[in-house]
Length: 278
Ligand SMILES: [Ca+2]
Ligand SMILES: [Ca+2]
Image 1 (cartoon, rainbow, N blue to C red):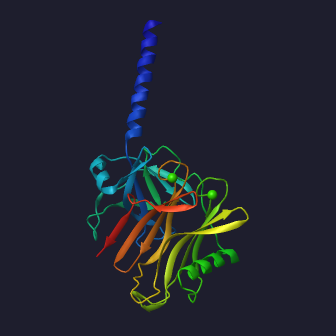
Image 2: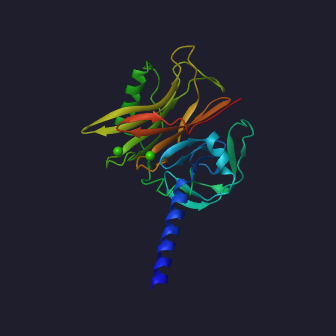
Image 3: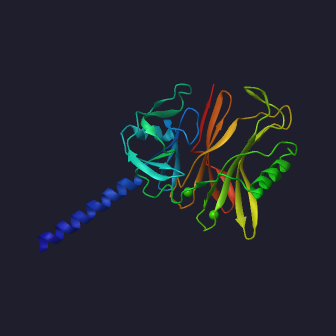
């Protein structure tokens, strides 16, 4: 009996050590994209945004050193939930912007996020629903935002909208992208052009508009960054609230930005950012 007891204690200790080691490991986060950078398209690239370790974000520069060993990833679509698990291709400097690291995906993916298996929580705890029709209230929210930006004369155009409970408080938010580009030529957006991502949050009987990020040309000097789109929505740090991964595709420049939404406020997560310009 005595021997068995020692064995039990030993094996319990071993389990604890393994669990502690797994928890300490950084989980890298990749945003998956097609060259056209749209979540509905088949994905061919994974861009390393950064990682998460014990609820804290780690920048991609710091992370690259720890990523020599191949590891397992879980794949998620924000409209489908978990779609699978597996390995990714070799991490390598980006062709255009070698300061960034990315992977060419070994097979065709429909997921939009790959997160290291060390993240032990559901990255998509609530699946978002794409809205196929936009309500009058959605259009009014865009019109009100345009008024605030000083763009009363711009046309109200909603490009995409999703319904999901971002913060897990039991009430759905609406995340929408609005955009109208008055083209001067194929690479230049004229005055009154805008593109932005907006959260509509229900507060009692009313709804509040929370601008996530925007670009617009009100004056000649204003620089139009590019076209916004929602790449993914997932809980990247395991606190139960979902973050937004937003792509901005400009002429010769592209950004991937990540935002946290907490208590009705949006903050940018600097560690999980990606920029490429030529
Ligand atoms: Ca909510
Ligand atoms: Ca979170």
